[in-house]
Length: 277
Image (cartoon, rainbow, N blue to C red; front, side, top):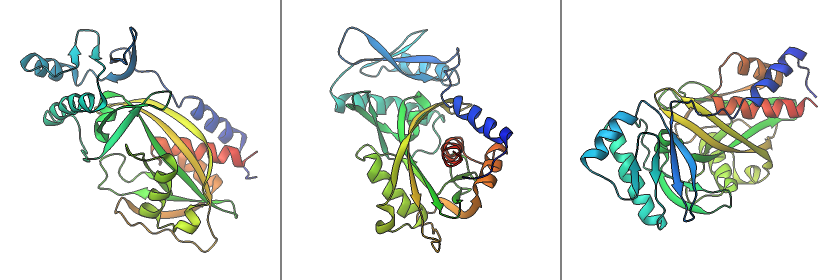
């Protein structure tokens, strides 16, 4: 157990209670008909993008996509055809300058039953407010200290912010477990014999508007990993500028000082509160 003040605990708990926020009233809902008579909301479109998209679709329509004054509607189709239409839509918004950090990597949209309906460029998921998935790993030592990575200044999202020892989006063909071990090696140089000891501990649902970027909706799959006392993380993919090892209390203070990415702040706060019991 670590020693945290009552006020710090209360602040972390309150933060976690606000992890999933509703979309603002001026965001346009995106409806998807999965084959039945009822359509469900699967995303939200920022008012920053709506005028450009309205003009674009008036000039040239896209199969399976329709836009009215109060919703964007996606019709159901086979996954390949649906993915192709959504890629056309995302590419238009990218050309318009509204999707920074295009990665040429796909995420998959998966429903509550685990079925994959379409794939799309990962940078576009936030633009449309589609729910994505990511893994985050808390790397800690038995001395009640936790390793944190600092994101590279070249990152398009949250440059220079503190992050977990490893974290990353789950690709369209990955499981959370596979993604976690891949990210541990790429971001922190954790070898397979250590990475295979990750412990699944839960999931956090993040939802929040991101000014100028869209709506962030992501399921975070959380793992804990106890690291050997002599282990020093080393980045391999250029996405992390360095690492620091801090006490749980210092990590909490840095969370409340807004030094973390939003996702890593919630994951680390959850870890600290679990360890404080």
